[in-house]
Amino acid sequence: MVKMKLGKTLLLLLSLQVFCYAVIGAPQTCPANDVDKCGDSDGWEGDFFPDIPKIKYEGPSSKNPLSFKWYNAEEEVLGKKMKDWLRFSVAFWHTFRGTGVDPFGAPTKYWPWEDGTNSLSMAKRRMRANFEFISKLGVDFWCFHDRDIAPDGKTLEESNANLDEVVALAKELQTKAKKRVLWGTAQLFVHPRYMHGAATSSELEVYAYAAAQVKKAMEVTHYLGGENYVFWGGREGYQTLLNTDMKREINHLARFLEAAAAYKKKIGFNGTLLIEPKPQEPTKHQYDWDAATSANFLRKYGLIGEFKLNIECNHATLSGHSCHHELETARINGLLGNIDANTGDPQVGWDTDQFLVDIQEATLIMLSVIRNGGLAPGGFNFDAKLRRESTDVEDLFIAHISGMDAMARGLRNAAKLIEDGSLAALVRKRYQSFDSEIGAQIEAGKADFEMLEKKVKEWGEPKVASAKQELAEMIFQSAM
Ligand code: XUL
Ligand code: CO
Image (cartoon, rainbow, N blue to C red; front, side, top):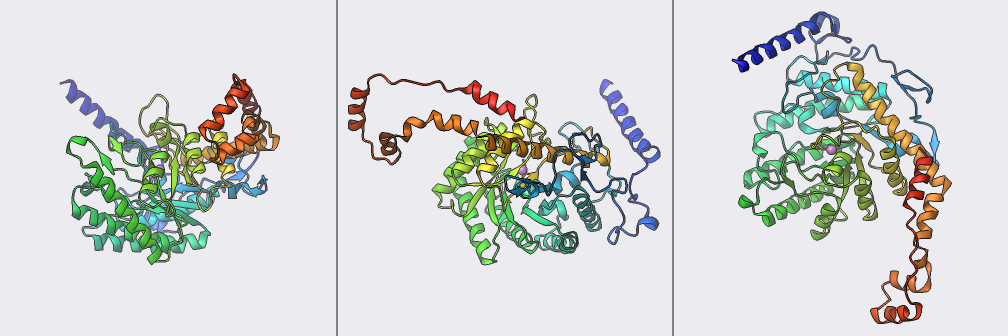
């Protein structure tokens, strides 16, 4: 009885929502069903965002939500333009395929250009919306999965043909708009064939299918001039070790990545191959758990020169680390290739993919990026989505502007800290005892235990200095 009532109420609410949308929420853009006004969806060149101007830098005092307060693309910071430090990218899957669906609820977003289908013409229309969006936002790059830009076909051949058709349009549009692909990737986690994994599936035919899909995704990324190619192994892991041959699965994953590195060379693709670590979700345990696990995997299989890492901040926190820790681990191993800029929520235990707006967090991130000399050919991909409850078209802009401003503030603050030098001096001072002759011997691997024992007898009890954590935090705060 209660269930029935709830069902009816939900139905009523849903139909009300559709009704309200049709009546009050008059689309802010050319409506999807207004063929006369907009032309058919394939050829539609109309405005998708007629109410949104080109987003400009207006400075910190601006109250205009559709302006940058901190991101000033051409401004130089530490000898490089902001746009070159940051190399922002829009993630097609969140911005153009995100519907607001969550494990408990139906879609909440009905963008005016969507016609409710997953057709090829809809895919092309979305691609036009993508380029208008990134052009108005002033971002130079975009990222995609094969299956979010073009519909899956009944066969591999059909899927490939769909992809070719959309990619041809994307190439034309991105050339006109002077935009570039930061990275492409294959979606190896949605289709039921990948339920046991792709490269780590227990089924040989699935391994082969995944290989064929990645082959094609690498080809189209190359065709679009992509600067990187990403492997996120969403289902490369296990749900229980009781039914899993972990040794065999990890070995298969390594063979798969070896074959990808070989194919990259064969087609003359010069982009960086990136592994994106994540500890779990959707699997209980994912094999590329974090940066250190991935580095060990790459080293063990002789792939260290072939791959770098794409560090996603929300994945970092899910693995029990901070984003800063993951970035530093990647950086000191020469593996920092790209950042998926997002964040989670301390009160929600899953991958919420929120826009990162915490200035302190952004400053820590930018300290790593500056120490890395930047990220190029990688960049900052906004692997982030609107909250389910944010349903206006302008929210897509506001979210990205806010994320870009946060990273820009992080960059400005990190530059201040570096130019000021007191934090670096504090760290240098902390280790200064190693700047001695014996310290140099230790660091060169030339200090044996007998020699050190002799020194202890000579020196007596060590004098141990303060770590100055609070002072370090005070210096850090002063740059915010
Ligand atoms: C999932 C995730 C992916 C990858 C690309 O958590 O981050 O969107 O970035 O497959
Ligand atoms: Co990601």
